[in-house]
Length: 454
Image 1 (cartoon, helix red, strand yellow):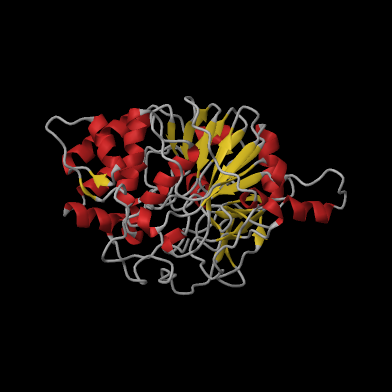
Image 2 (cartoon, rainbow, N blue to C red):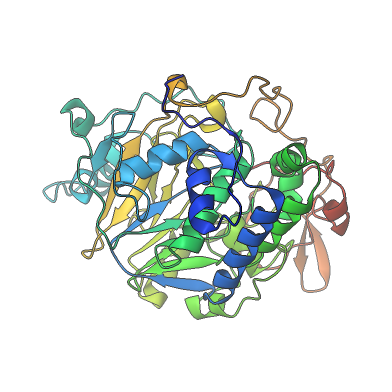
């Protein structure tokens, strides 16, 4: 391991240390003392309480997808982006970086065959299917772009006005969820107008008790008090951000209960993520090749199709919906015929084994996205815990067990209509499902309860 690589461990703070000292320690992958951590959580919570459900953000802005506790890759993300807010001496990225603009994405105007145009509209002309987070059956990505082959790298420094939007899932699965969230909270507290933290489905008491964050806090503090303080912060994270009024940023996707963004503004967000409804859908839903709505195999949220996304964007005057929530081997992926939705994934080599690259999306005043593709930093540039978690612990080999196969019912009026199979993705236009079996109230008190696969 290189000498200048941050070494994880407890922070050693001087007496009367404040936010600046906390931030310096957080950059070194040091977790704060319990008292300081609780104070930080309170500071961030007070800031979040003043923010709207849909936080407005002005360009230029960098949009980041899932991080999942991969602290050293988060540092690389900031290097690729030109540095953290307030950072003056920015290190060069440790990995080769590719920059892709809209000119690389859009098909030539001379091609009129709609099927061929749709194929060419896929990023860099490659097949870039989106996989559920738990699906690691694909071979490691061999993605290369023309920009990579020509040696293009990111060399510019960050604009003094650049803001960051993080689309949730800061914690779980990675080795350093606590340190990752601590760094993001320190940046939020220090630069509240430069960092927007959107809630993901993992910013939840239910999910973190199964996928690692709860256990990590217990191991490092000897109790659950810091985990509880962080969960209170989760409750106040914004549900979405909107860039210059035209690019909506959410963690998961759309909801059949939401037609306008004004309906998102009035959702009661200061709570645990509900089992169903608009709030749940915003953090759990996925785009899919369906006409309108389909039951999600995740057991929460919905699958939404091209027609739904196109209509939502038209009604709300949007150019694009940016979201995360799904592993993309190539780092990002546009969806649907009009590229109305894009998935941004920012955890390279997800769970330290998937082999995928990651991306961040930069949006300038012209609102044309630019994607910076980067890889995971090598082991020489990160600290790898001596005791790696076994494959059965919430990493990909040990997928959480789904609930026993039970018949699925669709609520139609006051009747339960049996679907054909538990795996059915039957398309329908109803908006009410029975509460998923895995999300009963008892899960709040039972870390052993398994959530849906992701």
